[in-house]
Amino acid sequence: MDFETRAIHEGQEPDPTTGAITTPIYQTSTYVQEAVGVHKGYDYARVANPTRTALQECLASLEGAAHGHAFSAGLGAVTTLMHLLSPGDHVVAVNDVYGGIYRMFTQVYEPKGYRFTFLSAEEISRGLAPHLDERTRFVWLETPTNPALNIVDIQAASAAAHAAGALVIVDNTFATPYLQLPLELGADLSLHSTTKYIGGHSDVIGGLVATNDGAISEQLAFLQKSLGAIPGPFDCWLVLRGVKTLAVRMDRHCANAAAVASFLQGHPRVERVLYPGLPGHPGHEIAARQMRDFGGMVSFLVEDEQEAVDLVARTRIWKLAESLGGVESLIEHPARMTHASTADAPFAVPPTLIRLSVGIESADDLIADLDAVLGR
Ligand SMILES: *Cc1c(COP(=O)(O)O)cnc(C)c1O
Image 1 (cartoon, rainbow, N blue to C red):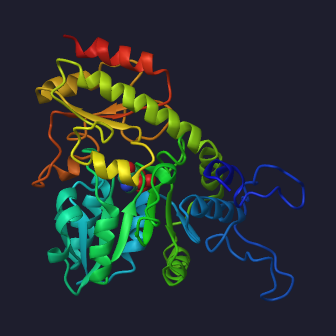
Image 2 (cartoon, protein in one colour; image 1 turned 90 degrees about the vertical axis):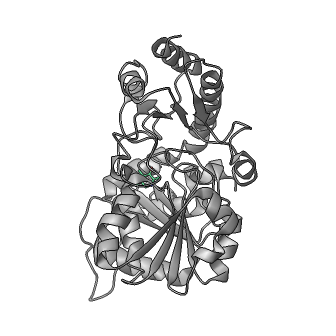
């Protein structure tokens, strides 16, 4: 079945006892057993919950994966993945990784003796091999990256990582499985903050890991129950409800983002537009090869920092807020907001950069709002 159909039906058969077409919110902590150890597949809700099972089956299918594990947050998923490693192990990560992941790697795990090497998207795509050693366990990719929208060649990076015996993790939050299938391109694990496009309505925090590796999936199920970074049933239900419309939302996000990027590129007050759909973007060709379309995120640079800070507070439809991927358009200043934790890194976000999460409102309204605040 096609993506759009699986998003609505996979893992979501009508409830067998009542016929309810929508998967119920199984708001229960425990399950009654007929005899010791005799039950219907559920014993305690940290281990498994039917609403979570439906979500995991649906999202795994969308990623082209055999297994999916849902978590309390994108960062809950990352924390759980980090428990596959031990101090002394080495992780190579793209250097403009999501700010919260950079903070976790450098401020939580590095002091405990885990080792990290941060490389640019370009270095990872073209020359990863010399940076890998016998203790390199993860190659951590994000593509497109946040907020610079750099593109990593997943196929090339996976080949180099696998030759060195490392696992490849792709943070697929920006692209979503509708636009990009990391496992098909050679990655071992695909990671999501379902808070963003998959949930799509700015009303829930959640995470997911998908994989075709049965042994890793078993380890993740063990860690899910042993560490406890699990989502509640209502949160699972919200994500499941959101994902049903992912395909139509992404089509509109992409179309609106392309229109906004093209408007910005022609504007005299804009120094530079970062959007992988623009032919001049350094990752355009790789993106065109590994993505169905170029996504709903656009970044642009203005002349000076004060102008950027003032501008993001003056738009009317674009709301000044962190996060992304919801139906409503958001604008933010990463250097002082989402990416403040990378301020001291050599690859800090330029302070003149503004990030847009282009929503699914009317593109004309969105462009008019930006035009009004940009001035001439
Ligand atoms: C938001 C985000 C995360 C973290 O997810 P949470 O749900 O906020 O914990 C990870 N990666 C990317 C790319 C994100 O945008």
